[in-house]
Length: 173
Image (cartoon, rainbow, N blue to C red):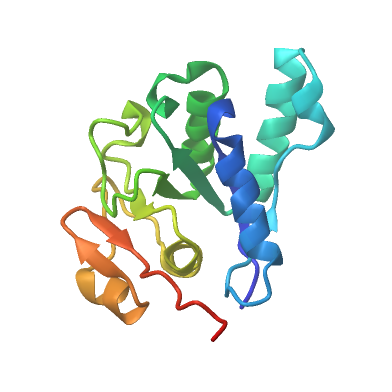
């Protein structure tokens, strides 16, 4: 599979979820990969102008923008909202990754900047995020999600607005 250049935006309180995504990428048994456009040393800087300039450079390299949406993401304006604005301005395909397991927009947690922007919403789970990176497309103004059959074909169990992979069987006998 080709590597979509993806910039992942997230609240600082959700950095562990981003690190887990990096682990998905490194794990040999999960079909998940993305070209990481994240900042490295810049995140240690206090210079907002410098950080935003470096973020813009990375977003301009990306064709996709994935926002990890947690409990406080909708309230993060300084960087998270700004990154989404830059991705929208650039015309990136946008994927909203719900940390609460929702497979569609969750009005309670979704930042207003992502509403009615043609965003694909998926739960935070490796198979569906990988599928979204491969299959999400720009839509004009209507948010969207994958149909139930996409989830079931990937092995997910659906429960209302949520989708989960069943636990793996214990490998030892």
